[in-house]
Length: 121
Image 1 (cartoon, rainbow, N blue to C red):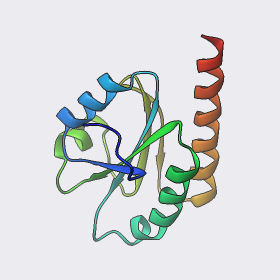
Image 2: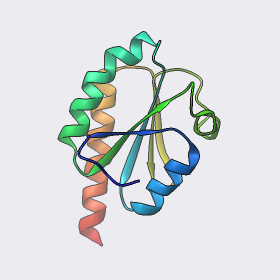
Image 3: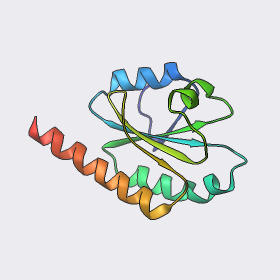
Image 4: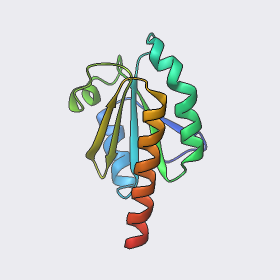
């Protein structure tokens, strides 16, 4: 799997996620665990897409909880939406719920941390 022109990748299982991590170990990857029937997931989707376009140094992914059970189990997803921030396969932070300003703040923070880390090396 390679990064496409689409700002958000869709992951269907753990193998795809692991492949993405191997390709981009230095990048922050945000996983959006959602369900097609979830109202709050639909409500926050436009903001998630906006953030994916704005923060090019971060990889944004969507994970359908009804299809990617292995990823849901790994990250102990109990509610939707759940956003998991990872780097090199390690969990940096988890955000449960669709609070727009909190998601925006966390993406900004992890993007800045990743940028300053890249500059330091």
